[in-house]
Image (cartoon, rainbow, N blue to C red; front, side, top):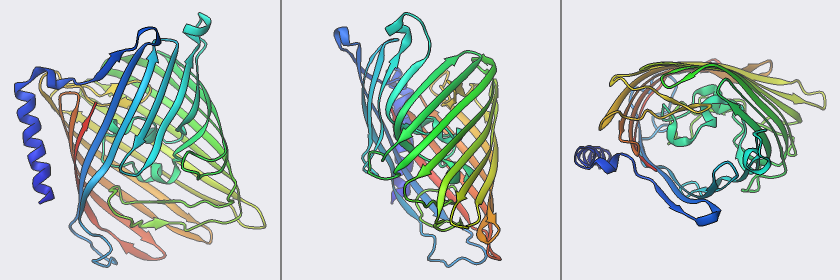
Length: 382
């Protein structure tokens, strides 16, 4: 039944795009006088995950087909160009706060562009596949090493500077997040060289790093098999105690040339432990290629963004390889590699239909597991 709902949503979206030109670019903005411009945003994504070949070493009950909303994000903003931006976002599905920030631009306040200061809760920078907006994800879920390394959103302050040929940021996070978790402090930074930065012609080479001191003294490294509607992790270190600090580093690259693109990242996480406990590290990488069959290009604004159809719709096909190694000394978290095939259908700027098929291969504590999973998503955003 829920599969039929996804198919119906696809048909309705296609019909709407064919008959209503204004449907292709919907936004909700209103002038706010001297205060600037008021905006309302949303990103609603309905998913179906299914599992075909479960392969070796897996209980048939461990993976169950499921369908429900992956995200129900809403947000409000107040912006005055080159002066300030106020943003409040919440995911109604997970009942969590997203970005809640005030951003001040030096160009409008000081008359000179020396960068911007952002204060509030926002994303930490390590994990190129995660730092962009959730509506722009090329696959249904983040690659294996990004899931293990990405620290999520924290509360802090950040200075950032973006130029056509480079970008840089440094941030300090302290205390709890807005859900009351992740207590501790983190120093983080990101920099990238962008020698090519034109529409349909981008080369981005970057590095990001952070050092976290968690108040809890614990951490855990793990990853889902690149589908989200399951709690099963094929690789998992379990809870690591005695953690004094966590170092995260990432090397990131993006190449866009017309309808073709490549994106990749190498990530490393190290938990430095005290009390005589051995340090634990995990590492991994991913690389994916994309071809926009209809001829458009992926967008870029410091990270990759959605394809914008030249006409009614655009079609993109993708292939990703990712791997993650969580075996280190006595910690046998396991090793996993995935191949994911993806198709994205963009209907105007506001509707995105996605399909992924994942071939997973994991070995943990000598046990091999090689399930296959497929996912479908109907997403509406503005």
